[in-house]
Structure formats: C-alpha cells, structure tokens
Image 1 (tube, helix red, strand yellow):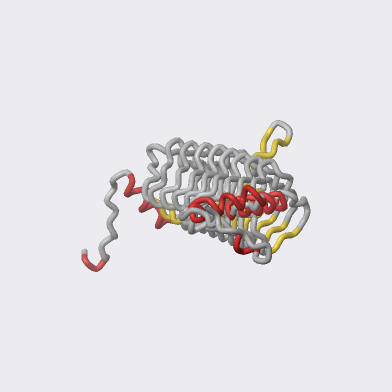
Image 2 (cartoon, rainbow, N blue to C red):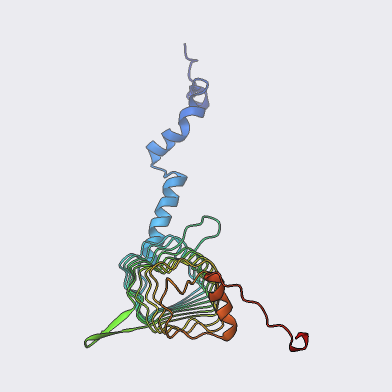
Length: 283
C-alpha cells in the first residue's frame, strides 16, 4: 500500500520509479514529452543551414578565408568570383559555372578525410588557380578555354576528355596553361591541346594517351614514365624537358624542338649506345 498522504507535505506522495527505468527510458521520454532535439538532429540542422548559406554565393563577389567544405554547389552560378585562402574540400561543383573566377591559396582536398572537390563538367573558361591544392580533384569533361594553373599541387588530378577550344569561324583556338605545378600521376588523356602550354612541371607517370599536343609548349618538364599511347607531338617545344619513353618509332616527332643533349634520351629509347668521343691525343 501507498503511504498515507499528508497535505502539508507534498513530497510524501512521490512514487519511486522501479529500478532501471530511468536509466533506460528517461532520456527518450524527455525527448518525446518536450520535443528536445537530439545532438545528432542539432548537428544535421546546423549543417543544412550552413550549406544553404554557402549556396547563396553571388557571382562577382569576393570571399576570403571562407569554408565551403562539403557544400552542394552543383550547377551554381559562381562567375567572376574571387576566392582567397578558402576551403573547398569535398565540395560538389559539378556543372557549376565558374567562368572568369580566381582562386588563390585555396584548398580543394582535405588531407585528413581525403575528400577532394568535384569540378567535373564545370564551366572553367578563363579561370585561374594560383598556389592551390588540387590533389586528385576531378575536372573531367570540363569546358576550359583560357584555363590557367600556376604553382598548384595537382597530383592525380583528372583533366581527361575536356574541351579547351574556342570555335572561331571554321577553326578552333585552344588555350590551356599549366606552369610550375606538380602533375605527377595526373590524367590528361583524350584532349585536343595544340598550342597549349605545360611548362616547368613535375609530370611523373602522367597519362597523355590520345592527347594532341601539336605545336604545344612543353618546356623544362620532368616527364619520366609517361603513358603516351597515340599522343601527337608534331612541332612541340620540348627544350629542357627530360623523358625516358618517348619512342621516335612510335610517335611522330617531326618539327619537335630539342637541345642537343636531349637527343641522348631518344637514342636510349631505340637502344642506341651513345658514347663520348675519345680525346684526340689518344690517337
């Protein structure tokens, strides 16, 4: 039986809960009765609000030290913006219009989570990237006439099957400039790049399969172990670059510009043993 109540002492009517009920159910009960959001719900709501705010980026604006990590900006209008020291790790920029925008000292890959940004199929005409981390970023099938990269980390970046042309009458102008970048293991395959420039870059094991580099400027690159199936290099300027598997019997090198010392690289690829001339005094 319950103890007799005393109107003067309300505490005497308190009925104790069976042991264990509070520990198992009280938190859930409070959430149901008072609709208190859980920590996970609060975090998800905050993330949604932050992403919504990120999606309100206006074209022509300037952003400094802003975080857009993980933002869903696919098909966003980001034309003529300036971004400095911003974080785009894991940002979805697929099919976004970035025409004329400038990125300086920006991060497009999170070294902890390894989540790179995705700019595939984006409009990157006249866009400039300077001193940015673009490691393994996806650029494939982008539109990129006038696209420039300078002093960027681009290891494993994918620029394959992209369009760097500007139709003019019955012909196409091409403009792509990559200078002083780390392009190791990057993918440039299946691109039409006559007259483009890739200079002073590290290009270890870059894939250039079926890439047309006619009359391209390829100065002072470190290019060991290229994948160059079906590549076109007619008239390209390779002065100062080193390479070990550009085979003259497989690749048309007519009109290619080289320094005399670079002929040794070509000789080695076809099995020639080039030796230094003996001293005249030895005869």
